[in-house]
Picture (cartoon, rainbow, N blue to C red):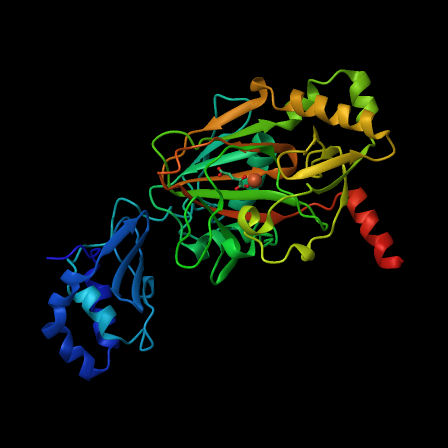
Length: 403
Ligand SMILES: O=C(O)CCC(=O)C(=O)O
Ligand SMILES: [Fe+2]
C-alpha cells in the first residue's frame, strides 16, 4: 500500500515507455519501495520524499496525474528515472475527471461563457465559468478586464488550483509581472510569483507572517504602478486570515466637493518607512536596490473608464508627505483620508477556501490581512502586475533621466 496520487492509464504508459529498457525492467521489482515514501498532497500539488536528495512533485488535475510532464523528479536522471516509473506504476490508475472539462469555446468567437455576479458587498464580483487550465482568448480577457474595471475585485472559486505556469500566463495577459522586492520569497523558475505564508518551504521563504497586515496597496517605487494583483490560496486557516479590500472609488465619491477640489492635483511622495527590517520582514536580500521615494497622484484615474479613486496609501510599510503642503497639514490630510477610506461601509471581507483566486485593481483599492494563529499554516501565491503610468511618477523619472 502507498499514498501516491492516482495516475491516468495513458500517462502511466507514457512514463514507462519513456524509460530506458534497462530501467523499465526494474520498475516491477522495485514497486514496493513506494510504500516508504512520505507523500503530502496540498491542493493540486503533491510531493513524495524518496530520500534526502530526491523529491517527486506532482501537479494534479482534480486529484489525478493527467499528463506525464506534471510529474517531476529532482534526481539527476530525471525525467527518465526509476523514481518516476515507480511513482506511476505503483499508484492506482484513474480516468481523468470528466466532470471538470475545460469550458467549450462557443460558436461565435471562441470565447467562453462567463457569468459575473456582483458580491453583496461594496466591491467585488464572483466569476463563474472561467477555467484557468484553458488558454485565455482575447474576448474573455476583455470581458474580465471590463468586470474588474466595474467591480475592482474579481473572485474565482476554483475546483482545482492553476499550475504556476497557468498563473503566470493568466496574469501576463493583463500586464508585465513585477517580481517582488522580497526576492527570497520568489518561487524558483517563476520570479513573478511570491509565497505569502507564515512558513518557508523548499528553500522559499514565506512573507507576511501571521500578524495583521493593515490596509495598504502594493507599491512599485519605479514607474509604472502595480495596477493589478493576483492572489490565490493553497492552504488556509480554520480561523482568522481573512483578507479585506476597501473600495477607493466609492470612498472618493463620498467625499464632499471641497475636499475633492482640494485633493484633485495633489501628489504624495512615498518612501519605505524607516526601520523596516528587510531581512526578517521583507525577506529581501538587498535593500539598496530600492529607490528611496516616488511621487504618485493622490487621485488615481482609471484610464479605461475615467473613474476616480482616492489613494492615501500610507499603510504599514510607507511613510508619505503631500507635495507642496506643510508637513503637518499633509500628514493630517492623509490620516483623515485613510480613516475615511478604511471605513467599514467601503469594505469587503473574503473568507478564503483552498482554490480561491482573487484579482484586483491595486490602484483603486487597499487591502488588509487579518491576523491568524501562527500554529496553523497559511499559504498563498501572489503576483504583482504592472500597468498604468502615473503622470507624476512618470514626470519625475523623465527628469531624473534628463538630469
Ligand atoms: O495575506 C494576505 O491575504 C495578503 C497579503 C498582502 O498584503 C499581499 O499579498 O499583498
Ligand atoms: Fe499587499
